[in-house]
Length: 454
Image: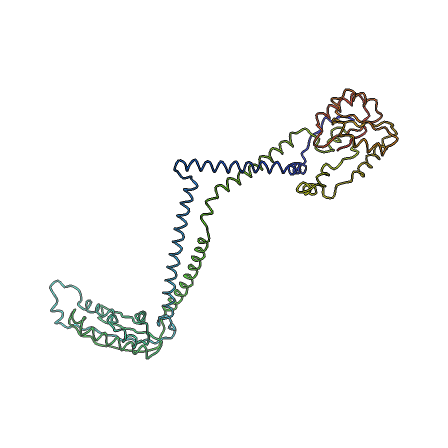
């Protein structure tokens, strides 16, 4: 037996993990205590603020959130109203407008051209300083010939019950240079444009005798009239824009309704308790981290025998047998049993098998009549091993000496013994005490043949 001076302690992460897991009770208790402590701190902090007649920052923020929530609700309701009305208007226009339903490549068009004639008497009657052509004022009276038309006449002429969109079928163009008025009527049939143009003619004649004549005396002469099949190059774009606008309106309406549903399903009252819940959850997490950190440090800095290989690496000792440290947990109940099963799986070996191995290895070391079980532990820890080996090795005398550093006779007994087997316990035996014992045994030239790990 010799001490390896170059020995370095390695950290077994798996062993560290289970070192922490087996202490789940204390971790849970501290986590709950921290959770309750931070919850109480939050409660009394808020109570003190309320006693001063003030609101906490969270409550002020909650009020602001509620106001923003109400504003967002109203905004989305307003969007729904807007898009609903817009879609109703657009759908009504699409369904009832004669013009928008026309075939842009094949429609009937009626055109009348009128000439405004002003003689010299009109020019002579102009007031002094009048600088522009009097025909300009006259033409302005003809720009909206349907404005004074009777609804019943409009319905009869254009064959529709809806007069709202009839103005789209009529186009009036005035030319101040040529003193002309061009009136165009569009429609799905020849008859419809002829009827529409007949009504327009009567309206223009009425203007020529009334309002337009009052502006300046003149004569209105029909120069040409025609009815033909033609095309409207602007209509396809208008039809496409209308369809696109309806699709976008439906999309925005759907989005606004979905957003409103989301907002209405939110319960702002539930959010008021978030402060307490968050503080309690924070306390719980801090408690877990605190205890896990404590156990990591305790594992790193404790000077205990963590696993049997330390005796092999540090003291060049053969390990005759290593008992399952978590066997009691593995055969126990609840979470401890689950953790133990996770750690060792099916690797738990029966004590009889381990003792058989120990017996075999001891017998291989020679025919010594006396075997001393030596340990830094108390002797009661060694009794079970002594009893088992006494039964299995009847020709040997099995002695025990515990508390080596406190037992003055232990060195003498170890020196006289034919063979010595060290017995130590994982997570209990102190490496510092084992070092002291090992130095004493080396000085006394004790025959240490191996070790048993409990």
